[in-house]
Image (cartoon, rainbow, N blue to C red; front, side, top):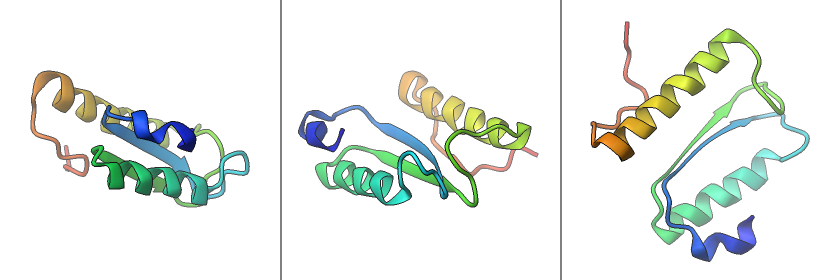
Length: 87
């Protein structure tokens, strides 16, 4: 994936498990940095202690909320605040 970084233009929202054994956190951090260096708007959330895949309702809610806000910003022009407290 990093080999195609020069073609990247689309903003990227990345969620990654700190203890992912399939794709290391170092690999996703390299991709994040390469996208940032290229000027692609990119956000990275590393979930502490998590592996490959997220299964708890809390994790899924958090990812769904971030993703919804991301798309509302890029598709509907809404303000982007990924850490806004809704409660």
